[in-house]
Figure 1: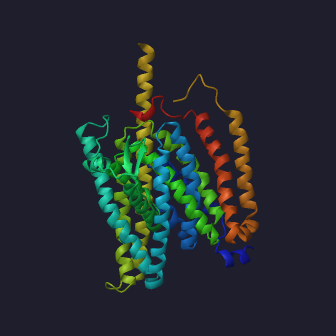
Figure 2 (figure 1 turned 180 degrees about the horizontal axis):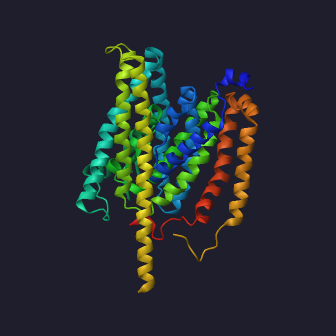
Figure 3 (figure 1 turned 120 degrees about the vertical axis):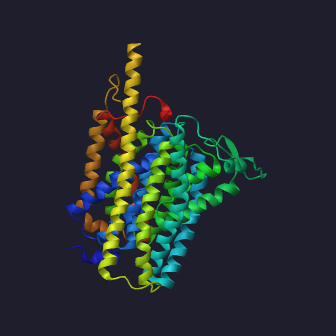
Length: 359
Length: 81
């Protein structure tokens, strides 16, 4: 029925099972994104590919659901006073450049080393970045929790204090989230790195949010909310670029959006119930879990490239299944922490309201 | 969480829900047209982008009201401290 169109555009046939699956993954991804500013994409792209969607169409369609989702999420969180629009736009524009450069690198690697080479590059980037950044974020969240100082104001890191102290005339911009002037010569590389990561592993926020917190000195809640502005700017540019090449399957994108807008509203509301360190806790937990998922695939791609002894087809298939399972687990873990924290926050609020009413 | 004093937005929920439903029905019943035109590239790139904005407007408002009607709202104190 859709043969002609499919031959041209590689758009798959949809069935109830696919629709339900994408809607649900979209919901959970949206919930996490609303809370930490990004996430979900690392499951959505492989989830679409497992349904037979070609890799580039999966990436393009994911990006086309991401920007409207980020728009709705950032509007919601702006109502809570958590968004720094200026910082989001400044980082978003440089992130756009990073996306274009990242996509160019991806294309070159694929041309020279083929699919396995490209997959190995993506997985290695995942493992290295998530190990370093995820480790820092999770360690910080755990030490905040252990110190018992979870309600206090977040400390600005020495690095951020140094960045804020540098004055380069003609490049200084005031950002309300940081409450200081920072040179755009610092924000441009950070945005660029966020974009490059978004083009490589689909989740730029894994660099964007920690860099706003640790390098620029923004509070966690504002960093995660501002990331949504970056995702919107970067996502719209990226989606348009892919759409120019006819790669966006709008049906897939809108079905995912259908679920993710329910999730992002809930996740955004969740941030008003929790202490700031919970943002880092959710983000760090997801990053470190996803790291294991990707690490498992590294030997498979290395074997395909002949860099190590050949791994049998069955073993490779098993490792792929386990890897995907861990990714789903990472997302579910993030969602469970968000819902749990929201539930506890809600109970605490009800208790204090009841006490106020009695007094 | 549920505010007892505030009126719940049932009317807007219904209107936005109906518009969202119509959009999704259109999306799923017009797949031949969509597959044939939205993937053409070039200036046709505006089609998926505009579609995404239209869906996000109606569905965004619907999902926001959906949780409000269920009694799930942001904490009264901003920032969750």
